[in-house]
Length: 46
Image 1 (spheres, rainbow, N blue to C red):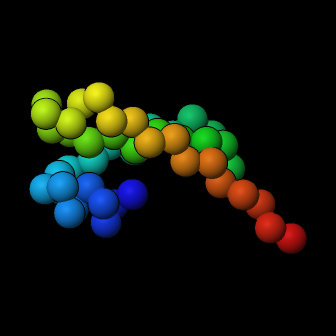
Image 2 (cartoon, rainbow, N blue to C red; image 1 turned 90 degrees about the vertical axis):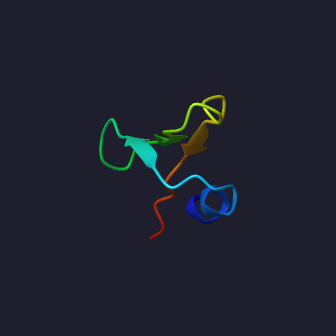
């Protein structure tokens, strides 16, 4: 996600966490890309 944002010229993002090992959001902090939201789901591997 961060590599794609960097290629698009987005240098600042916000991470929104709720709890450990739960899904979280990554949002760009620019006005022109405010409609982009990335949902990340961690996977626990044993």
